[in-house]
Image (cartoon, rainbow over all chains, first blue to last red; front, side, top):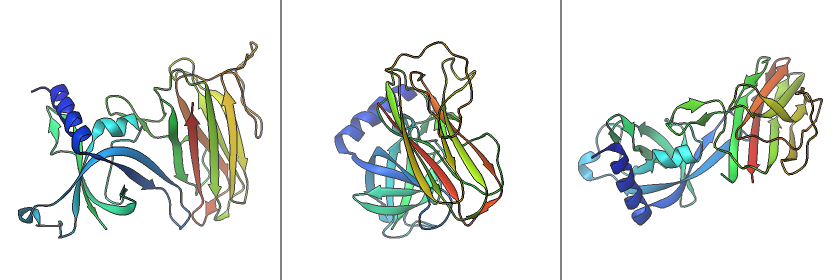
Length: 117
Length: 143
């Protein structure tokens, strides 16, 4: 399968089972620091029991976010710990942003975000 | 193409000159200091917000567009801030005739109608050292 085919497959699945969330980034410090929300599609899932190891704790959730959606929203592909995800109105902290697992032939298909909150 | 775009957020501390604060991404995922893919943009509403902390003298935000794929940039709106929090807005439209003119820098709180290319970016120049979590943010509602 080529990366384009995988992207198309992810897009079909995301349209079928995904939901709209917001990726939120704050800049600077202080209570009135600026922020920007980018609405993207995501698949929100719990971790399987066997995945609860290392820094992943019970209650954490995994967000699968298509790279194409981030590019469309003009969000730089540098998601990192400390960014936020707003899921169903609740702001969650990004604990880790994995941009390796869902690569095909070097092409980033989707991020896996470990979120907490 | 229509929608709200982030033309940049930045904490302002030491004086900066012509600092590009826009962080976009190309279709291939490469970071770039501009927001592009805005072909057909007929108007853009802009908002620049300064959250003031302390110190500093002046902070100037200039929003620019380009008609030659980023080889040169044209000022379309300028927002001037000093030592107070403020939120300033402007609207720039491409749907008006613009007579031939030389490309020139905008004066304080100036704007240029009639010229919008396929990309935007924001540039910041500040004087004096700001402190206390001073930050600037610029948004664009593209239509």
